[in-house]
Image (cartoon, rainbow, N blue to C red; front, side, top):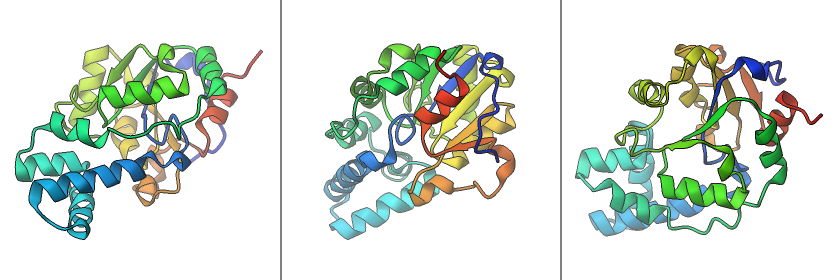
Length: 227
């Protein structure tokens, strides 16, 4: 694993960016809000108390990759209902980031959001950051037929849908486990490390993590510095 960049950006044709805790700092704690909404949804859906709901949320996340997948498999819920409820949050903790916008502008190649969230949430976050115009597309959980990263099928789908050559692609994600299928396909991988316990995941197997950063803006500035 390499904390320095050492990555020639001209060799990358397509950049795949995760959204949450990757484009903005995990310290914004949007997931704290989302987790509260998820637990409230489960309380109403299953008639359990709050502590049981929290345990179910985490269990499904660990077993299925997302809480949504667990709820779909075990309870047959409509995904749109869940997604619209849990993403009805205050995104103002995410601050506009002109430096990120400038770094993305200098970064050669296509840029696509690759997220387990839905498009509306991605658009809300990117609007706060001020970077939406830097991305040509959003590949969200609906585009993945509600299969979450790191399911390998999802990676094959985004490559096919957007005509991506994995040997000329790079992927940034805050969850190291999500980088395993990308590396297996031949992508360059960048782990955006956070304080969340799920972030490290499979990071101990360093072969699939090519670069590490704690600050995506600073890392991009190192890859594509200002003239």
